[in-house]
Length: 156
Image 1 (spheres, rainbow, N blue to C red):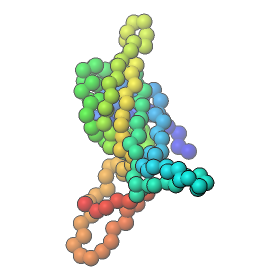
Image 2 (tube, rainbow, N blue to C red; image 1 turned 90 degrees about the vertical axis):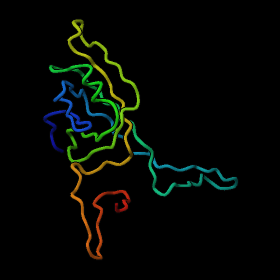
Image 3 (cartoon, rainbow, N blue to C red; image 1 turned 60 degrees about the vertical axis):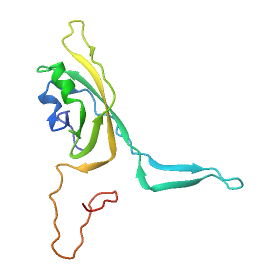
């Protein structure tokens, strides 16, 4: 296991440590639940699972932060709005497509109000993507393309 020497996250192209925000801990990153329905059939033991062809639910990541030097509340609020790629320093080659969908509030951490603590809720699409994205492949003749990931992917 690799030792982590710095903790940051990047959202929409800006790293947290560039805008006066320090990551307090790496967030829990759950496996996305499979979409489907559990059916109870009379006379049958257990249940029958009706899957939606490998579809997955979105996941929510709660990112705990604290302000540092260079922190400007308005700039951070602007940065942490909308949608973008979300990358963490412990997996810098993977990204989530994420959106900040819920409000978050800053609270004073010390009596002198010199640091603000806050938790940002990110709603993420269920799959992580290669980051930066692989170069485009353009087929000019009959051929095949291999997806190195673990989820089914159609060409664009």
